[in-house]
Length: 508
Image: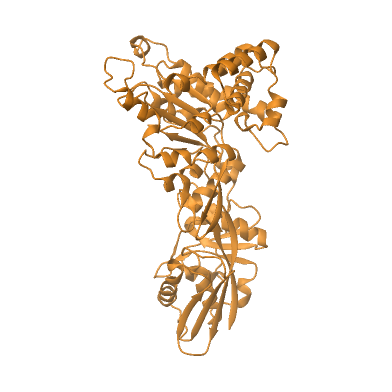
């Protein structure tokens, strides 16, 4: 007997349909899985055999052949356990063939027949819906994630016997999820706040501009100046996620196996802080079948690189292309995958190896300082919009009598107003933020007043700016004007933007 069961797999951030074809024939007992399965898929033979027996069903003593189509694409993971088991149950008469019509199955089986959660359910169910499936059966721990897809009925399965019962008079109750409930209550609650940071008013201003226009930031300063403290509060001033952004992030985290099953939808912007010992692959992503790395896990959020020069130079240089394009393409033996990587790069570093350059504490030689700073290349620095110096905090600013600074909620309000201006400006365009404007849109939206134009010309010649630095100054000035609620870019806006582009001359 032959039956075809619909299942799925993931390639990159997208799911695709895999037809699990099960054939039961007379002959010497055997159990073969073909269609480019990896080790985890091949091992499903033993899991399926044990699960069916321990669930109280007889396992057929015949020649069993399972084909995973399309056969020219490498299959990985344990998600095919459930469709293979369902196919065998149909072939042995425990289920009717009509049970597979319009249904999608995916899940890992335990040896006792219970279902374990799998990765990548959301993109798989999206692919199933696109292919015409009307119902899907997934592990109970993945059901809320699958139910984020509207227009398809999701049945949470805890044990394989539930599927047999569902089609024989004991139906499983479908699960329903209201996406709006994840955003009920408004702003996310963080345990940190911008008001906690004493002093550093100029750095806070730079981070506000960065949040409003999605500009990359480099903070340079001695140890204890508050660079890391400020960075960890960056998510508190970023605009709340839209539903589309949440779905994009959730797909990536589902594929990576990092999704919290209790919270099926990511409702807070990612804040990724890889250690400086992280490898090139962990940042970019990779593997035989490419998986997302830190720069993709930070999509629609913040990637914070503390102690920037301590990272491998190869790892830092590989970020140049994603910073420009907003995506990264990984070509490996298992396939070519493109992952989105629209992230705000937030980096911090010391001015020298010991961190106390310019003071009596510093014992670094000129050669040591030069070697330390040379780890950051000119092309990478050129892609960082805002360069800001975090100076030591004065005692009066640390004193308990010092007035508290603005709260994150206050700053976030201004940032969201600036984002609304950008949303209106870029309606119908492929970009959403000032930082991502191409040259054509810069010319259209960054018109300067006469005195501002003269100022920029003088600065361009005196500082010998690159074309990229010239455009970045205009983008920052546009964001500053948006925060002020002004259409025209004045000399004052431009002067502030220029002040964020000079540290490379001071240190490098």
